[in-house]
Length: 493
Image (tube, rainbow, N blue to C red; front, side):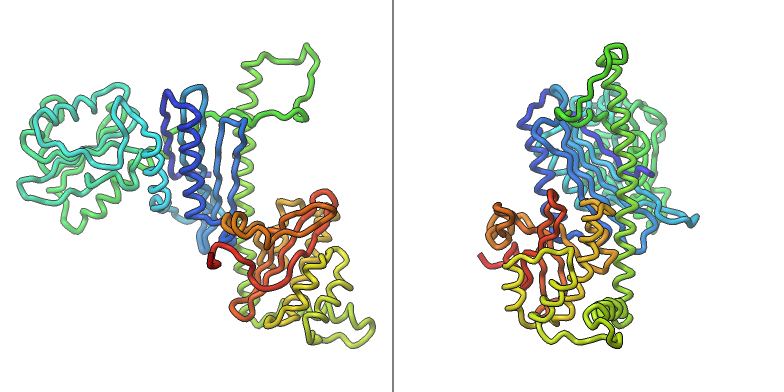
Protein backbone atom coordinates (compact mmCIF):
# COMPACT_ATOMS: atom_id res chain seq x y z
CA UNK A 1 0.00 0.00 0.00
CA UNK A 2 1.38 3.39 -1.06
CA UNK A 3 0.22 6.64 0.52
CA UNK A 4 -0.16 9.17 -2.33
CA UNK A 5 -1.88 12.01 -0.46
CA UNK A 6 -2.01 12.95 3.21
CA UNK A 7 -3.51 15.99 4.92
CA UNK A 8 -4.04 16.33 8.66
CA UNK A 9 -5.37 19.53 10.23
CA UNK A 10 -5.66 19.84 14.02
CA UNK A 11 -7.71 22.66 15.54
CA UNK A 12 -7.68 23.36 19.26
CA UNK A 13 -10.43 24.60 21.57
CA UNK A 14 -13.18 22.85 19.62
CA UNK A 15 -16.36 21.21 20.78
CA UNK A 16 -19.06 18.95 19.45
CA UNK A 17 -20.63 21.73 17.36
CA UNK A 18 -17.46 22.07 15.27
CA UNK A 19 -17.22 18.28 15.03
CA UNK A 20 -20.79 18.02 13.72
CA UNK A 21 -20.12 20.88 11.29
CA UNK A 22 -17.25 18.91 9.73
CA UNK A 23 -19.28 15.69 9.65
CA UNK A 24 -22.09 17.55 7.85
CA UNK A 25 -19.56 18.83 5.31
CA UNK A 26 -18.38 15.28 4.63
CA UNK A 27 -21.95 13.92 4.44
CA UNK A 28 -23.01 16.61 1.96
CA UNK A 29 -19.88 15.99 -0.10
CA UNK A 30 -20.59 12.23 -0.13
CA UNK A 31 -24.18 12.72 -1.33
CA UNK A 32 -23.04 15.12 -4.07
CA UNK A 33 -20.17 12.98 -5.37
CA UNK A 34 -21.17 9.40 -4.50
CA UNK A 35 -24.98 9.03 -4.55
CA UNK A 36 -25.90 5.77 -2.88
CA UNK A 37 -27.68 4.35 -5.93
CA UNK A 38 -24.89 5.16 -8.40
CA UNK A 39 -21.92 3.12 -7.15
CA UNK A 40 -20.35 1.51 -10.16
CA UNK A 41 -18.54 -1.83 -10.24
CA UNK A 42 -15.37 -1.62 -8.19
CA UNK A 43 -16.61 1.13 -5.84
CA UNK A 44 -17.40 0.53 -2.17
CA UNK A 45 -18.22 2.98 0.63
CA UNK A 46 -17.84 2.28 4.37
CA UNK A 47 -18.62 4.52 7.34
CA UNK A 48 -17.70 4.45 11.04
CA UNK A 49 -20.12 6.68 12.91
CA UNK A 50 -22.06 6.43 16.15
CA UNK A 51 -23.26 8.89 18.78
CA UNK A 52 -20.82 7.64 21.43
CA UNK A 53 -17.78 7.34 19.12
CA UNK A 54 -15.35 10.31 18.93
CA UNK A 55 -14.23 9.06 15.51
CA UNK A 56 -16.13 9.62 12.27
CA UNK A 57 -14.51 7.85 9.35
CA UNK A 58 -15.54 7.53 5.70
CA UNK A 59 -13.67 5.09 3.46
CA UNK A 60 -14.19 4.97 -0.31
CA UNK A 61 -12.46 2.29 -2.38
CA UNK A 62 -12.35 2.60 -6.17
CA UNK A 63 -10.91 0.32 -8.83
CA UNK A 64 -10.89 2.16 -12.15
CA UNK A 65 -11.02 0.23 -15.45
CA UNK A 66 -7.56 -0.30 -16.89
CA UNK A 67 -5.79 0.85 -13.73
CA UNK A 68 -2.98 -1.12 -12.13
CA UNK A 69 -3.82 0.24 -8.66
CA UNK A 70 -6.88 0.46 -6.41
CA UNK A 71 -7.37 3.85 -4.75
CA UNK A 72 -8.67 4.08 -1.16
CA UNK A 73 -9.78 7.51 0.10
CA UNK A 74 -10.16 7.82 3.88
CA UNK A 75 -11.71 10.90 5.52
CA UNK A 76 -11.58 11.11 9.32
CA UNK A 77 -13.04 13.59 11.80
CA UNK A 78 -11.75 13.00 15.34
CA UNK A 79 -12.50 15.01 18.49
CA UNK A 80 -10.29 14.10 21.46
CA UNK A 81 -10.70 16.39 24.46
CA UNK A 82 -10.73 19.81 22.71
CA UNK A 83 -8.57 18.96 19.68
CA UNK A 84 -10.50 18.43 16.45
CA UNK A 85 -8.56 16.62 13.71
CA UNK A 86 -9.61 16.57 10.07
CA UNK A 87 -7.58 13.96 8.20
CA UNK A 88 -7.74 13.06 4.51
CA UNK A 89 -5.47 10.52 2.88
CA UNK A 90 -5.38 8.45 -0.29
CA UNK A 91 -3.71 5.04 -0.37
CA UNK A 92 -2.91 3.16 -3.57
CA UNK A 93 -2.85 -0.65 -3.56
CA UNK A 94 -1.20 -2.49 -6.50
CA UNK A 95 -3.50 -4.93 -8.28
CA UNK A 96 -1.13 -6.46 -10.82
CA UNK A 97 2.01 -8.61 -10.86
CA UNK A 98 3.58 -6.53 -13.63
CA UNK A 99 6.65 -4.41 -12.92
CA UNK A 100 5.60 -1.09 -14.48
CA UNK A 101 6.19 2.58 -13.55
CA UNK A 102 3.38 4.15 -11.56
CA UNK A 103 2.70 7.86 -11.24
CA UNK A 104 -0.19 8.69 -8.88
CA UNK A 105 -2.83 10.91 -10.48
CA UNK A 106 -3.11 14.50 -9.29
CA UNK A 107 -5.59 15.21 -6.54
CA UNK A 108 -9.18 14.94 -7.86
CA UNK A 109 -11.04 18.29 -7.86
CA UNK A 110 -13.75 16.82 -5.63
CA UNK A 111 -11.19 16.20 -2.86
CA UNK A 112 -9.82 19.73 -3.28
CA UNK A 113 -13.36 21.07 -2.87
CA UNK A 114 -13.89 18.97 0.27
CA UNK A 115 -10.77 20.33 1.94
CA UNK A 116 -11.65 23.90 0.93
CA UNK A 117 -15.18 23.57 2.36
CA UNK A 118 -13.88 21.98 5.58
CA UNK A 119 -11.47 24.87 6.14
CA UNK A 120 -14.31 27.34 5.73
CA UNK A 121 -16.51 25.42 8.17
CA UNK A 122 -13.81 25.06 10.84
CA UNK A 123 -10.81 27.37 10.25
CA UNK A 124 -7.43 25.92 11.18
CA UNK A 125 -4.15 27.68 12.03
CA UNK A 126 -0.48 26.97 11.51
CA UNK A 127 2.04 29.06 13.45
CA UNK A 128 -0.72 31.57 14.32
CA UNK A 129 -1.66 31.99 10.67
CA UNK A 130 -4.92 30.78 9.15
CA UNK A 131 -4.62 28.13 6.45
CA UNK A 132 -6.38 29.43 3.33
CA UNK A 133 -6.85 28.58 -0.32
CA UNK A 134 -5.83 32.05 -1.53
CA UNK A 135 -2.36 33.42 -2.19
CA UNK A 136 -1.27 36.29 0.07
CA UNK A 137 -0.23 39.35 -1.96
CA UNK A 138 2.78 41.24 -0.55
CA UNK A 139 3.73 44.63 -2.00
CA UNK A 140 5.43 46.51 0.87
CA UNK A 141 8.76 46.18 2.64
CA UNK A 142 7.00 45.50 5.95
CA UNK A 143 4.90 42.81 4.28
CA UNK A 144 8.06 41.15 2.95
CA UNK A 145 9.55 41.16 6.44
CA UNK A 146 6.38 39.54 7.82
CA UNK A 147 6.63 36.75 5.26
CA UNK A 148 10.28 36.16 6.21
CA UNK A 149 9.39 36.11 9.92
CA UNK A 150 6.66 33.56 9.27
CA UNK A 151 9.03 31.35 7.30
CA UNK A 152 11.47 31.41 10.21
CA UNK A 153 8.75 30.60 12.79
CA UNK A 154 9.85 27.45 14.68
CA UNK A 155 6.27 26.20 15.13
CA UNK A 156 5.40 26.13 11.43
CA UNK A 157 4.21 22.70 10.23
CA UNK A 158 3.32 23.36 6.59
CA UNK A 159 5.70 24.40 3.79
CA UNK A 160 5.61 27.98 2.52
CA UNK A 161 5.66 28.70 -1.20
CA UNK A 162 6.96 32.18 -1.99
CA UNK A 163 6.79 33.29 -5.62
CA UNK A 164 8.56 36.52 -6.49
CA UNK A 165 6.68 37.93 -9.45
CA UNK A 166 8.88 39.04 -12.32
CA UNK A 167 7.62 42.60 -12.12
CA UNK A 168 10.39 43.74 -14.46
CA UNK A 169 9.17 41.54 -17.33
CA UNK A 170 5.52 41.61 -16.20
CA UNK A 171 5.08 37.84 -16.41
CA UNK A 172 2.08 36.12 -14.88
CA UNK A 173 2.52 34.09 -11.65
CA UNK A 174 3.17 30.39 -12.14
CA UNK A 175 2.29 28.91 -8.74
CA UNK A 176 1.06 31.75 -6.54
CA UNK A 177 -2.40 31.96 -8.09
CA UNK A 178 -4.00 30.13 -5.17
CA UNK A 179 -3.36 26.89 -3.34
CA UNK A 180 -5.56 24.76 -5.63
CA UNK A 181 -4.61 21.09 -5.08
CA UNK A 182 -2.22 22.26 -2.34
CA UNK A 183 -5.00 23.70 -0.17
CA UNK A 184 -4.33 22.67 3.41
CA UNK A 185 -0.82 21.51 2.50
CA UNK A 186 1.02 24.84 2.03
CA UNK A 187 0.97 28.59 2.60
CA UNK A 188 1.28 30.54 -0.65
CA UNK A 189 2.74 34.07 -0.90
CA UNK A 190 3.12 36.36 -3.90
CA UNK A 191 5.76 39.12 -3.69
CA UNK A 192 4.88 41.77 -6.24
CA UNK A 193 7.32 44.68 -5.77
CA UNK A 194 11.00 45.50 -5.29
CA UNK A 195 10.32 46.94 -1.84
CA UNK A 196 8.62 43.74 -0.67
CA UNK A 197 11.49 41.67 -2.12
CA UNK A 198 14.03 43.83 -0.23
CA UNK A 199 12.25 43.37 3.09
CA UNK A 200 11.93 39.63 2.49
CA UNK A 201 15.53 38.89 1.49
CA UNK A 202 17.11 41.05 4.20
CA UNK A 203 15.33 39.16 6.99
CA UNK A 204 15.12 35.68 5.43
CA UNK A 205 18.78 35.56 4.49
CA UNK A 206 18.40 34.07 1.00
CA UNK A 207 21.11 34.78 -1.57
CA UNK A 208 20.85 35.08 -5.35
CA UNK A 209 17.09 35.56 -5.11
CA UNK A 210 15.35 37.92 -7.50
CA UNK A 211 12.28 38.43 -9.69
CA UNK A 212 10.95 35.19 -11.18
CA UNK A 213 12.13 32.95 -8.34
CA UNK A 214 9.83 30.41 -6.66
CA UNK A 215 10.88 29.19 -3.21
CA UNK A 216 9.45 26.14 -1.46
CA UNK A 217 10.60 26.42 2.15
CA UNK A 218 9.89 23.31 4.18
CA UNK A 219 8.89 23.23 7.82
CA UNK A 220 11.94 23.12 10.08
CA UNK A 221 13.78 25.37 7.60
CA UNK A 222 15.60 22.55 5.84
CA UNK A 223 17.18 23.14 2.43
CA UNK A 224 14.60 24.91 0.23
CA UNK A 225 13.60 24.02 -3.32
CA UNK A 226 14.23 27.05 -5.58
CA UNK A 227 13.10 27.53 -9.18
CA UNK A 228 14.41 30.40 -11.31
CA UNK A 229 11.92 31.02 -14.11
CA UNK A 230 14.31 33.17 -16.13
CA UNK A 231 16.48 30.10 -16.63
CA UNK A 232 13.56 27.99 -17.92
CA UNK A 233 12.43 27.81 -21.54
CA UNK A 234 8.83 28.97 -21.87
CA UNK A 235 7.73 25.49 -23.02
CA UNK A 236 8.90 23.99 -19.71
CA UNK A 237 7.04 26.33 -17.36
CA UNK A 238 3.86 24.24 -17.06
CA UNK A 239 5.95 21.15 -16.47
CA UNK A 240 7.76 23.01 -13.68
CA UNK A 241 4.43 24.05 -12.14
CA UNK A 242 3.33 20.41 -12.14
CA UNK A 243 6.66 19.37 -10.59
CA UNK A 244 6.31 21.82 -7.68
CA UNK A 245 2.73 20.74 -6.95
CA UNK A 246 3.69 17.07 -7.17
CA UNK A 247 6.74 17.68 -4.94
CA UNK A 248 4.65 19.17 -2.12
CA UNK A 249 1.93 16.49 -2.35
CA UNK A 250 4.46 13.63 -2.42
CA UNK A 251 6.46 15.09 0.47
CA UNK A 252 3.31 15.44 2.59
CA UNK A 253 2.27 11.87 1.73
CA UNK A 254 5.61 10.54 2.95
CA UNK A 255 5.85 12.65 6.10
CA UNK A 256 2.38 13.37 7.56
CA UNK A 257 1.55 10.60 10.03
CA UNK A 258 -2.01 9.38 10.42
CA UNK A 259 -3.61 10.46 13.71
CA UNK A 260 -3.88 7.79 16.38
CA UNK A 261 -7.51 6.68 16.46
CA UNK A 262 -9.11 5.30 19.61
CA UNK A 263 -10.87 1.95 19.16
CA UNK A 264 -14.64 1.93 18.66
CA UNK A 265 -16.69 2.08 21.88
CA UNK A 266 -17.14 -1.25 23.59
CA UNK A 267 -20.57 -2.77 23.86
CA UNK A 268 -21.63 -4.83 26.85
CA UNK A 269 -21.24 -8.06 24.90
CA UNK A 270 -17.70 -7.07 23.78
CA UNK A 271 -16.28 -6.97 27.31
CA UNK A 272 -14.56 -10.13 28.55
CA UNK A 273 -13.59 -10.35 32.21
CA UNK A 274 -9.95 -11.33 32.70
CA UNK A 275 -8.42 -12.80 35.86
CA UNK A 276 -7.02 -10.06 38.07
CA UNK A 277 -3.43 -11.20 37.59
CA UNK A 278 -3.75 -10.97 33.79
CA UNK A 279 -5.27 -7.50 33.56
CA UNK A 280 -2.75 -4.96 32.19
CA UNK A 281 -2.74 -1.39 33.37
CA UNK A 282 -5.21 0.93 31.62
CA UNK A 283 -2.61 2.94 29.68
CA UNK A 284 -0.85 -0.13 28.29
CA UNK A 285 -4.15 -1.77 27.36
CA UNK A 286 -5.31 1.36 25.53
CA UNK A 287 -2.05 1.61 23.57
CA UNK A 288 -2.17 -2.06 22.58
CA UNK A 289 -5.79 -1.76 21.51
CA UNK A 290 -5.05 1.30 19.37
CA UNK A 291 -2.17 -0.49 17.62
CA UNK A 292 -4.30 -3.58 17.09
CA UNK A 293 -7.15 -1.50 15.67
CA UNK A 294 -4.77 0.21 13.21
CA UNK A 295 -3.48 -3.18 12.04
CA UNK A 296 -7.01 -4.49 11.58
CA UNK A 297 -8.10 -1.38 9.68
CA UNK A 298 -5.08 -1.67 7.37
CA UNK A 299 -6.00 -5.32 6.71
CA UNK A 300 -9.61 -4.37 6.02
CA UNK A 301 -8.48 -1.68 3.57
CA UNK A 302 -6.32 -4.20 1.71
CA UNK A 303 -9.15 -6.73 1.56
CA UNK A 304 -11.60 -4.02 0.47
CA UNK A 305 -9.22 -3.01 -2.32
CA UNK A 306 -8.97 -6.62 -3.50
CA UNK A 307 -12.76 -6.95 -3.34
CA UNK A 308 -13.29 -3.75 -5.34
CA UNK A 309 -10.85 -4.89 -8.00
CA UNK A 310 -12.54 -8.29 -8.22
CA UNK A 311 -15.94 -6.59 -8.50
CA UNK A 312 -14.70 -4.44 -11.39
CA UNK A 313 -13.17 -7.43 -13.19
CA UNK A 314 -16.40 -9.39 -12.84
CA UNK A 315 -18.38 -6.47 -14.24
CA UNK A 316 -16.02 -6.21 -17.22
CA UNK A 317 -16.29 -9.95 -17.86
CA UNK A 318 -20.08 -9.70 -17.65
CA UNK A 319 -20.07 -6.93 -20.25
CA UNK A 320 -17.88 -9.01 -22.54
CA UNK A 321 -20.24 -11.97 -22.21
CA UNK A 322 -23.24 -9.80 -23.06
CA UNK A 323 -21.44 -8.51 -26.16
CA UNK A 324 -20.86 -12.06 -27.36
CA UNK A 325 -24.56 -12.60 -27.88
CA UNK A 326 -25.82 -13.48 -24.44
CA UNK A 327 -24.15 -16.90 -24.24
CA UNK A 328 -24.40 -16.89 -20.46
CA UNK A 329 -28.14 -16.14 -20.70
CA UNK A 330 -28.63 -19.13 -22.98
CA UNK A 331 -26.87 -21.43 -20.50
CA UNK A 332 -29.11 -20.20 -17.67
CA UNK A 333 -32.23 -20.69 -19.82
CA UNK A 334 -31.11 -24.17 -20.83
CA UNK A 335 -30.80 -25.07 -17.16
CA UNK A 336 -34.33 -23.77 -16.48
CA UNK A 337 -35.66 -25.68 -19.49
CA UNK A 338 -34.07 -28.94 -18.33
CA UNK A 339 -35.60 -28.58 -14.88
CA UNK A 340 -39.08 -27.76 -16.20
CA UNK A 341 -39.26 -30.36 -18.98
CA UNK A 342 -38.13 -33.34 -16.86
CA UNK A 343 -36.94 -35.86 -19.41
CA UNK A 344 -37.66 -33.97 -22.60
CA UNK A 345 -35.01 -32.85 -25.06
CA UNK A 346 -32.90 -30.07 -23.55
CA UNK A 347 -33.41 -26.88 -25.51
CA UNK A 348 -34.02 -23.18 -24.87
CA UNK A 349 -37.75 -22.58 -24.54
CA UNK A 350 -39.41 -19.18 -24.82
CA UNK A 351 -41.46 -17.91 -21.88
CA UNK A 352 -44.65 -16.37 -23.29
CA UNK A 353 -45.76 -14.15 -20.37
CA UNK A 354 -44.83 -12.77 -17.00
CA UNK A 355 -47.46 -15.00 -15.41
CA UNK A 356 -45.67 -18.05 -16.81
CA UNK A 357 -42.26 -16.67 -15.78
CA UNK A 358 -43.44 -16.15 -12.20
CA UNK A 359 -45.03 -19.62 -12.11
CA UNK A 360 -41.75 -21.22 -13.19
CA UNK A 361 -39.78 -19.08 -10.75
CA UNK A 362 -42.01 -20.00 -7.78
CA UNK A 363 -41.78 -23.65 -8.79
CA UNK A 364 -38.03 -23.86 -9.35
CA UNK A 365 -36.61 -21.20 -6.99
CA UNK A 366 -37.10 -22.80 -3.56
CA UNK A 367 -34.74 -20.39 -1.80
CA UNK A 368 -36.76 -17.29 -2.72
CA UNK A 369 -39.91 -16.10 -0.94
CA UNK A 370 -42.35 -14.30 -3.25
CA UNK A 371 -44.40 -11.61 -1.52
CA UNK A 372 -47.98 -11.10 -2.69
CA UNK A 373 -47.05 -7.63 -3.91
CA UNK A 374 -44.30 -9.10 -6.11
CA UNK A 375 -46.76 -11.48 -7.77
CA UNK A 376 -49.34 -8.75 -8.30
CA UNK A 377 -46.85 -6.21 -9.69
CA UNK A 378 -45.01 -8.81 -11.78
CA UNK A 379 -48.11 -10.22 -13.47
CA UNK A 380 -49.17 -6.68 -14.42
CA UNK A 381 -45.78 -5.90 -15.98
CA UNK A 382 -45.71 -5.33 -19.73
CA UNK A 383 -42.80 -4.58 -22.02
CA UNK A 384 -39.65 -6.39 -20.75
CA UNK A 385 -39.06 -9.94 -21.94
CA UNK A 386 -40.40 -12.39 -19.34
CA UNK A 387 -37.44 -14.69 -19.96
CA UNK A 388 -35.06 -11.95 -18.73
CA UNK A 389 -36.94 -11.64 -15.44
CA UNK A 390 -37.00 -15.42 -15.06
CA UNK A 391 -33.27 -15.80 -15.59
CA UNK A 392 -32.55 -13.05 -13.02
CA UNK A 393 -34.72 -14.85 -10.46
CA UNK A 394 -32.98 -18.18 -11.18
CA UNK A 395 -29.60 -16.56 -10.62
CA UNK A 396 -30.83 -14.80 -7.48
CA UNK A 397 -32.06 -18.17 -6.18
CA UNK A 398 -28.48 -19.46 -6.27
CA UNK A 399 -27.29 -16.41 -4.30
CA UNK A 400 -30.08 -16.99 -1.75
CA UNK A 401 -29.06 -20.64 -1.43
CA UNK A 402 -25.45 -19.65 -0.72
CA UNK A 403 -26.57 -17.10 1.88
CA UNK A 404 -28.91 -19.50 3.69
CA UNK A 405 -26.26 -22.22 3.75
CA UNK A 406 -23.65 -19.89 5.21
CA UNK A 407 -21.34 -20.02 2.19
CA UNK A 408 -21.47 -16.20 1.97
CA UNK A 409 -22.27 -13.44 4.46
CA UNK A 410 -24.48 -10.40 4.10
CA UNK A 411 -21.50 -8.24 3.15
CA UNK A 412 -20.67 -10.63 0.27
CA UNK A 413 -24.12 -10.58 -1.36
CA UNK A 414 -23.20 -7.81 -3.81
CA UNK A 415 -20.12 -9.67 -5.02
CA UNK A 416 -22.06 -12.96 -5.24
CA UNK A 417 -24.68 -11.23 -7.38
CA UNK A 418 -21.96 -9.84 -9.64
CA UNK A 419 -20.56 -13.34 -10.04
CA UNK A 420 -23.98 -14.56 -11.15
CA UNK A 421 -24.28 -11.75 -13.70
CA UNK A 422 -26.78 -9.68 -11.72
CA UNK A 423 -26.74 -5.88 -11.54
CA UNK A 424 -27.32 -5.55 -7.79
CA UNK A 425 -27.80 -2.29 -5.84
CA UNK A 426 -27.89 -2.62 -2.02
CA UNK A 427 -29.88 0.55 -1.19
CA UNK A 428 -31.95 3.43 -2.53
CA UNK A 429 -31.18 7.15 -2.59
CA UNK A 430 -31.72 9.45 0.37
CA UNK A 431 -34.44 11.28 -1.59
CA UNK A 432 -36.33 8.06 -2.27
CA UNK A 433 -36.07 7.06 1.38
CA UNK A 434 -37.32 10.40 2.67
CA UNK A 435 -39.97 11.39 0.10
CA UNK A 436 -41.23 8.12 -1.37
CA UNK A 437 -40.66 5.61 1.42
CA UNK A 438 -44.17 4.15 1.06
CA UNK A 439 -43.27 2.81 -2.39
CA UNK A 440 -40.68 0.48 -0.84
CA UNK A 441 -42.58 -0.78 2.24
CA UNK A 442 -44.04 -4.28 2.61
CA UNK A 443 -45.62 -6.21 5.48
CA UNK A 444 -43.37 -9.06 6.52
CA UNK A 445 -43.80 -11.35 9.55
CA UNK A 446 -46.02 -8.84 11.32
CA UNK A 447 -43.75 -5.84 10.72
CA UNK A 448 -43.42 -3.14 8.10
CA UNK A 449 -40.01 -3.37 6.41
CA UNK A 450 -38.33 -1.43 3.61
CA UNK A 451 -37.21 -3.36 0.53
CA UNK A 452 -34.31 -1.17 -0.60
CA UNK A 453 -32.02 -3.68 -2.29
CA UNK A 454 -32.86 -4.25 -5.95
CA UNK A 455 -31.78 -5.77 -9.23
CA UNK A 456 -31.56 -3.55 -12.30
CA UNK A 457 -32.15 -4.66 -15.88
CA UNK A 458 -32.86 -2.91 -19.17
CA UNK A 459 -33.67 0.64 -20.14
CA UNK A 460 -36.68 2.67 -21.28
CA UNK A 461 -39.49 0.29 -22.39
CA UNK A 462 -37.38 -2.73 -21.39
CA UNK A 463 -36.61 -1.41 -17.91
CA UNK A 464 -37.49 -3.61 -14.94
CA UNK A 465 -36.60 -3.52 -11.24
CA UNK A 466 -36.81 -6.39 -8.75
CA UNK A 467 -36.85 -5.11 -5.15
CA UNK A 468 -35.71 -7.43 -2.36
CA UNK A 469 -35.69 -7.68 1.41
CA UNK A 470 -33.01 -9.72 3.19
CA UNK A 471 -34.26 -11.04 6.55
CA UNK A 472 -31.17 -11.41 8.75
CA UNK A 473 -33.07 -13.43 11.38
CA UNK A 474 -34.51 -16.14 9.11
CA UNK A 475 -31.88 -15.89 6.35
CA UNK A 476 -34.70 -15.55 3.83
CA UNK A 477 -34.60 -13.53 0.61
CA UNK A 478 -38.00 -11.93 -0.01
CA UNK A 479 -38.91 -10.80 -3.53
CA UNK A 480 -41.01 -7.72 -2.69
CA UNK A 481 -41.70 -6.04 -6.04
CA UNK A 482 -41.24 -6.73 -9.76
CA UNK A 483 -42.01 -3.87 -12.12
CA UNK A 484 -41.13 -0.44 -13.38
CA UNK A 485 -38.74 2.00 -11.66
CA UNK A 486 -40.24 3.18 -8.36
CA UNK A 487 -40.20 6.87 -7.50
CA UNK A 488 -36.83 8.35 -6.44
CA UNK A 489 -34.80 11.57 -6.77
CA UNK A 490 -35.49 11.70 -10.51
CA UNK A 491 -39.27 11.70 -10.07
CA UNK A 492 -41.35 14.86 -10.36
CA UNK A 493 -42.38 16.26 -6.95
